[in-house]
Length: 235
Image (cartoon, rainbow, N blue to C red):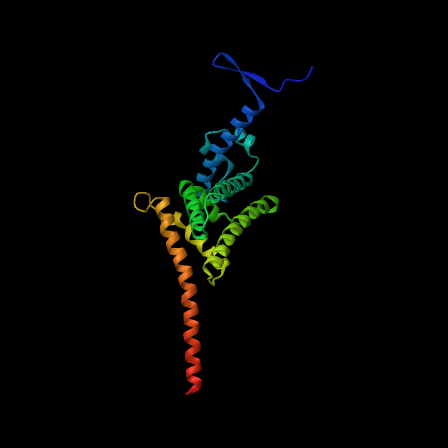
């Protein structure tokens, strides 16, 4: 006879079935809660300053219970970063399917980024401050996710350049935009600063109009400089 694919447990005096799927769902839910607590601890104490005992206290779990879900502090940091970038890219790609124009697609990128990070400010600080901690295979996997996210933005900027017939460095523009977005946790104040949607519009206007104007201004300045040089030679 084949082995059963489920087990039963007794809860509040009643026997309940426990299938592999439901057990995995509970495991994943508990793991997500622990990751949230870990982000808070890493945010407060830094990765090097935090211990597994600190993480155990913050999550309300025993140390042995914590090790059941995560074998090391490094694995916790890895999963915080992996979960962040996987989630934000999954949300972004779904949103981009409904957006057409290059400017609107960049604004969608900004909104998606800000919405996630304003809702997960502790994780955002951890990503900014513990960017190069992970090593070996774990670090390589997270680095690959980051490169893919960066390439998505560079592709959107390349589309904008072709559409506007503009001349700017997509690399510099992408890294500048990340710098603008990633450091908002250092100054953002709920109730004082705008919410994510309005803030994304402000940043989008500043970023898009800035790089396009800079491209045009640079060309005009080069033309004026060239004309002055010719005029001086003719004198």
